[in-house]
Length: 321
Ligand SMILES: [Zn+2]
Image (cartoon, rainbow, N blue to C red; front, side, top):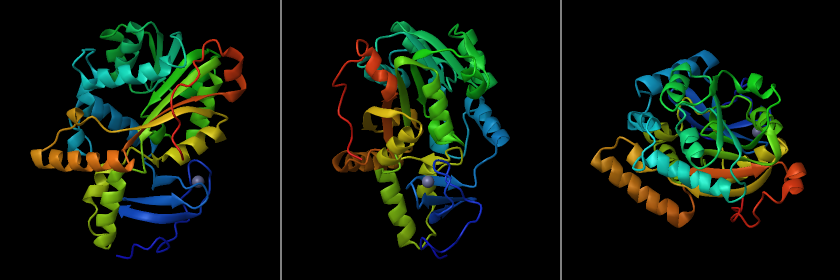
């Protein structure tokens, strides 16, 4: 199979961030192609699943914990209990530390709040929790288990109500978005003056892409299984630090801080051999700055200056992009 970037043209492919159809084939895996946008450098999966397929898949992930990647079998099981030994709770505390370094607790909206675990942690720390998710099974847990007043539906309709929030979070949401810039713009639209947006997403510029991509090219496109662990069907978009910052700018948002993180392996179902391989790759990632995840805080530069009392200066280093 030919794998040179210009080997195929795809008249249907369209960059979800900039709309360009100029795409270079990066990889061909399963029933998908991974493209590099030639105009804004975004890496994206094509074709995208349709909305019904995505909704059904998330219902399955929460209720049965299955999916195309067996290593993620237990990944969603950590979304149910607010316990100090839950690795996901520990991660949420770190993410809230980052937000609270620039914004005091106030009204918080979690877009894609799932089972409500993040909101439960935030409420403990003094935030007034609000959430929205289109997965009815997850919302039912948020209401019954955590007693959260969360909405079931689409963020677009929710945003039109005119409510405002001091923090808007979207943890591992933007990579699922069909219109990521529209999502960011809508999030900006519900920010109170001086509010902050928290985002996490996989980092395309990661050691996983480097190693799996090298195996793919060395095998002339026949070894695809390592890539299939990273480029998965429910993630349409793969941002790098640079393309994430550029997408924020398109939505009228400025970067407050960005840092690279590594997946907590306690959340994955791994054989000892796979775990050893991943630990080796993660050590390499730390050394080379190619960690597999991004955490970013963004704000609306037009209103952030008006409420500097709530903003703490020097919140952290911004990665070079
Ligand atoms: Zn583009």
